[in-house]
Length: 66
Image (spheres, one colour):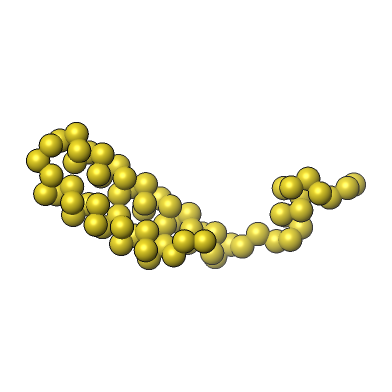
C-alpha cells in the first residue's frame, strides 16, 4: 500500500511544474498525471479505511467450495 500523502505530494509537484510549463501539450499531460495521482491517493485512502475480509478475499480468489 502506498501512503496517500506521498501521492498527494507528487500531484502537487506535478501541478506546480505544469504552472511553469510553456508548452500547452506538456502542461496538459502534467495536469492529467497530477489528477491520476490524486485518484490513486483517494483509492489508497479508501482501501486503508475499508480493508477486505478474509472471506471476501477467499471468494474473490475462487477458493471457497460451496
